[in-house]
Length: 440
Ligand code: DLL
Image 1 (cartoon, helix red, strand yellow):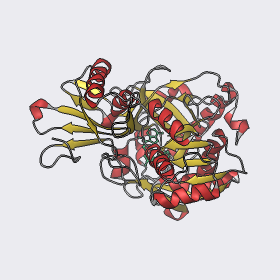
Image 2 (cartoon, protein in one colour):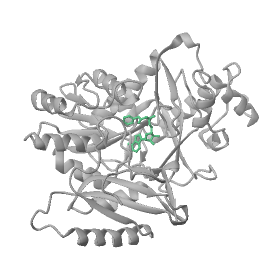
Image 3 (cartoon, helix red, strand yellow):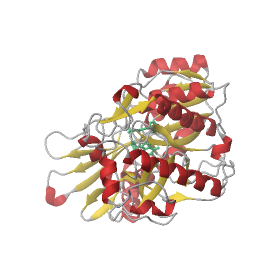
């Protein structure tokens, strides 16, 4: 563990620390001149942090992405602009940029959170970290970069794309840790195999920034011969390093709840759901300075679980993200998350792990979901026929989702690979050319 005193803190000590930090946060927010969160706190009858307990959390006001957009670029700052040393952001699901700010101490905190994630994956100061998350406004590249340096490891700041060069660097520098999106891990695995280097020095991969299932985890582990671990975060809260899996259990992500208080709430009503029940994750930043956020609604759906972990960390675990509130597709009255389709598709060994879901909206009265997938190889001996695979997938999708999904089995290489940025798994087709060649 990078910070064992914090990561393995007894539950009561942690709760006392969180309560103390929550009180300070509320006082800090109330003191921001003209602050939006201060006004909301007063409206909720909170005029001081003193006396608040963790049990009061559900009656404190939420913040949302809209608040960040409305306050763009610096409206929610809790420090003078001069104290901000960096900004980051994301293009966001709605296409509008979400901009976030960091003080020097915020950057130090972020580095420690990413160092925790790297150490949880088994990285040490002797490690070489091949960092293929994008560098720039996106938090992935620079976040992991600073975390690797904080740990004392050697970071290779390769960023995303230029895959041939990445293959050379992996074979020459022999990194033990790979950090990138899960979709880019697939692309790298494919490129390494094509270049004749299927086995590498890589021992663990820390993959996040987009949803991925355990079925995809199994595929990546097979392809790259490493342990594939999940890392979660969002710009608004700090970036990567809000939560990460440990290599010992690899069955959920430890949330760094000494700095980011987490709740799961009903996405519709906003009321807390019990542990073990999937809900929308809500985070409160307990120690951030430039952009402290109270009860930020992420839109990400996951379940929380408190149980002893073989790694010794006492931090609560969140399940893998099962979907985003706004990624849910509603087709003929049935709610479907892309990840549910992914799980069924990738369980079929005759299929490559790349896929695209096409929502055919050409006739709005007859919405159709089309799962486009690739066969592993062209007509290899021993594999079931195209029609057999299509019909068995269709029946499994119907059984699992309660919805009929059309399946298009395409030749290898048909689905565009993601080289830079986050994978796009769903495309809408409302008219004109199909979003993928070969679709009728
Ligand atoms: O994606 C931060 C990050 C970088 C996380 C690198 C992990 C690794 P944003 O660009 O602001 O920040 O996007 C945040 O991405 O609300 C989730 O919907 C999604 N997301 C992030 N990590 C995961 C994950 C970064 N492990 C949004 N699983 C979040 C599923 C994820 N979704």
